[in-house]
Length: 145
Image (cartoon, rainbow, N blue to C red):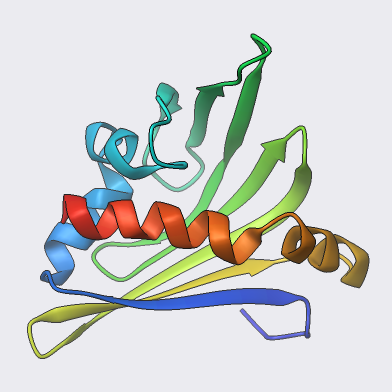
């Protein structure tokens, strides 16, 4: 996907082969172990991992409501790339997430890019802790793989 200046990107290297990192993104049981902040329980309401398939993950909030993450897988290139629409309710709707994996000397380089519709939406994500939040999740991902 082209960089139109509305993308927030995180790059990480994991001390694990690509197949293990791929499983962490593609397997519903493995995703539940790292998705979200530390100490958060994730309920995997739906995870239809195929192009056109939907996903929906719920994180209970202290007030009794749920933080909802959901979208539809647009592109899946096994072991290499996932592109999905994404809504993070109640905060953000209408973004596209792109995960690219590549092997580097027995480790996995991950490029995680979130494409926003507007500059305002991108700025809101940054202010709400995009890098800290996803960074914490990817720390958990590193422990899982």
